[in-house]
Length: 368
Image (tube, rainbow, N blue to C red; front, side, top):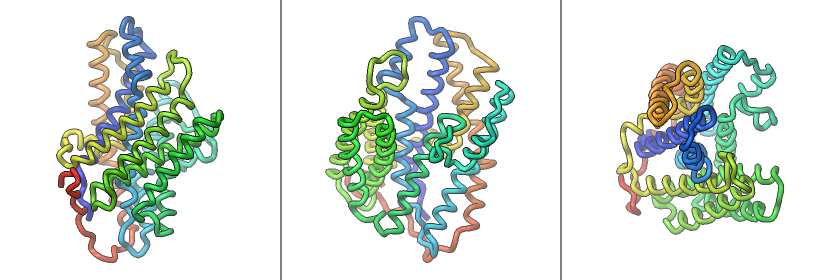
């Protein structure tokens, strides 16, 4: 079976902690008097870098590195891939929904429309133009789109073609950049943002094809990354540009998040397992649960206890949030996520042959 790459889990850990940092600092800035620190905090997470978007895009790169190679060598690879993804995503997601609904009912007496809840159960609410129960669920629609794209390409025999991912990134960048510059339409910008997120995933595949197996070369990575960066900057300016006031989503912060996520991912992939850090890799293993559960940990802690305004109180708040998020997520990972993945294996067909270990990294700057 494929061996687990610790540097990929380290990247997942960095990604989810970046998202968590953004959420914690937003609570501090929005809910508490920060005095002279206000603009320092606000500029950090709103003007210079949106750490939440950075973390999400880093997750997208990791998906591109992993997902296209998740189709098993079995009699029914598409069916087995779908089963694997279902048990990987849905049980933990449903657990998050239950916890979220209970949290909002107890703390705010909020009851959501049944139609919205049912739509969210499917994880397809975005495609039906029904609001997510909570805004951070938006990334799951992008993941599903990527899974569908990979499945179609796999069925056509194109997924593992040498230049398929290169073609996708180049085409998306050229079309998306032109649309961002020439078309003033929020709808078009929203669609191009989806294309940019998918581009990050396919760029992740390009990086993998370079550092594992050597099917591509670093000039391919450099050219595609440059086009992707231009696309990200142009689209961010169109979609989030304007006069910066107190909006966390500003052209500079979003554009830098996309570009920095690419650079961090490429650096980690280039050096491979030498970039692995075991404590962060542990957080990466449970990162999906952290992503789904931590927003509700923030709500509970913020409502029930406050450690005082000022650097010390804010620091304690952040540390408590991170510690409790990891603890709660380890529990949900152990009781829900991990058993669900194992249970899903029962429904997959037998492999045609015994799978080999993951190919070692190429010598193009990557460690074995």
